[in-house]
Length: 367
Image (cartoon, rainbow, N blue to C red; front, side, top):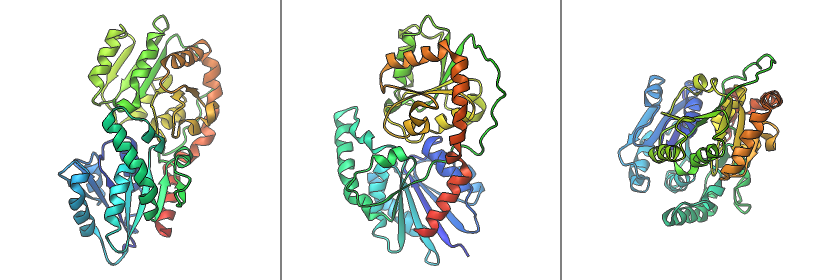
């Protein structure tokens, strides 16, 4: 008999980031113990592999969360099974608020809220509309999050950003970024003539790829290149910016890839210039593959993963000049930093898939 019925909700179930973490968890939970259902607004990027593994997928037609409330509630009620423990797992603050209000109307449904981005992002806005939306979300979190059964943050940095008067414990469970810790490469002199840098990112405003491009404008005389993997509404603007600075010979744009493991090994440095970041899978993959990481010292998990700069370089958020100085620093003494940051693999056990699955299994048992 199935003991637990898990219902995962994600409004935008795209590949990478949160979608990748949720899919890894679902695919590695025991089918004997769990019945798993996925609800998304619009297409779920992992629907084929979910269905091959007997995971039900409900792709609701309306992509707007507010206008999908009735459909979401009806779908959850259809998935509800009287014979076992029913658990709703919602992800990211704007979803969590609506889903908690919906779920509290369904008797016997336990609620787990997962926060994958720092709540400090609600203090960073890019328009009047964005300002109003985030202020409302921030206000509602204090009153609605305590109505859940459990809150999960995917890094200690995110946990610290919760209101002190929330009156609800927050549990930290790190993302399943890696399946194993790779063996260290044999120590040898590298002496690179050219530094090849990479960004794996959505090309959206909060990821601040513009800062990375601007930093190369200070490095025109240096032998460096930057490859940017990703798609998003700012792609054309970013391409135009690189042309404006006459950086087309240093910057290459490629489409989003699901195979980060294959592509990341080609590079020397990972750049992560976000305004805010959760617990970045790309940073963890980079560390596991012996890349040097240069990341913004932004709210979220960057500082924690890089141990306050002991395992990588942290630069001032949205400061392209400071980023360029950090790149120059690595360029001038590449061998030294390459060897220094190899020690970071000791800390990567937190991000193993096996540990993530074990922690969530314990949580599903207790909730």
